[in-house]
Image 1: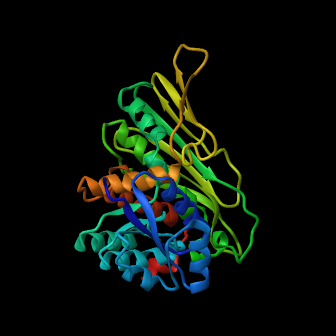
Image 2: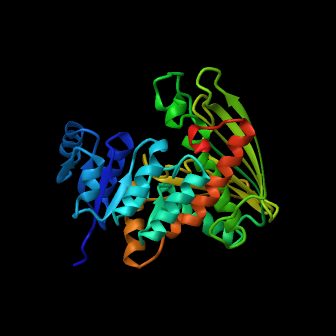
Length: 342
């Protein structure tokens, strides 16, 4: 009988709870410990999610010999410090997106993981769902012909609240880092698939958006990515504007519509629509799959079991390419964070 991967969860916010439920539903993982900034928070989380051990500091979690992999769920600006410390503790790292505030920080984490021989994955959970694999397969085999244009959006409206993480510049607020990273990653995935590659990096990035006058972070923004293979991507995001959160991929022989690209199957079944030139109605392709975060935990465990240096669904090279695009997008907006000066 195979031993399940023993997970520690670092931080006890909302997304940490979502991941804890995912591990509990996974085939190859089990919850081992949680660490928080206070014993009370850790104990409360452990009771709610059935975690065996609760640690009142992050340091204590990293010292727990029963933990093999750590899910870093702190706010963005703390990812770099704690992901590096997880690597130094000799434990594998699944870190919430964005991996950190900029490409330089992501490179430091990647180097720490390499130096300490641990696996690192940025937690783009949608990459582990069969819907995403199907989109890649359809593009690779030419189901819509040669891809020319990708439209990817992830945006929502949250009322302005200076105390909210979403609007707090010190906590990495704004749309580009919080949800724009998804749209960019999807566009890069598609651009790579068109050439049979796991991802592609754009040769040109242009962007615009609205910086909130009080918060100083982007309320909403858009960017155009141009790839060497001729594909153009239009990506958009926001924390202060409701948009159509879908992906559309246009090719010479048809197009794909992915209504729930980033959270497929989170509520109900996942569905994509394939429109072929000359046909009046689209082909509906549906997916029934395990819970999204369980798939992520199992993909991570499978990479470890196979002795891989990273997780193929979201490799370190892919993450670094994504962070470079986000840096360029923010530069076009005139949006800088304290981490950019480090």
